[in-house]
Image (cartoon, rainbow, N blue to C red; front, top):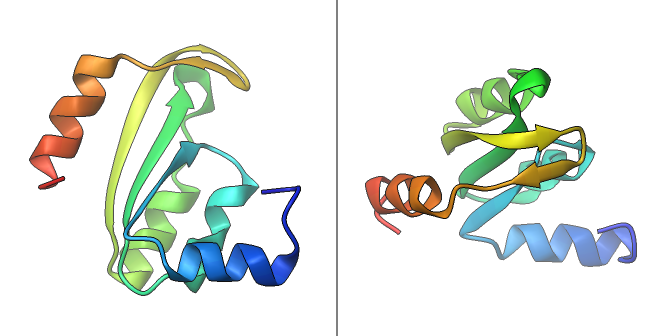
Length: 90
């Protein structure tokens, strides 16, 4: 996202049906979306409810996936990810 202009970021998120990414400031761009499914990935030591609360306020569907890893280095369990996406109807 940091390589995109602000207007490009807004357009990208405005067009998104699904937003998936690691816990971080980039997820805040979900506020430009109409009704996305938000999938937040984060290491266990970074469990923060901020984006969950935003999705609740905006009536977006949310799922958080705890990953193995530290800080920005995450390892996603692909089977768990598939299960969560299937459960969300994706």
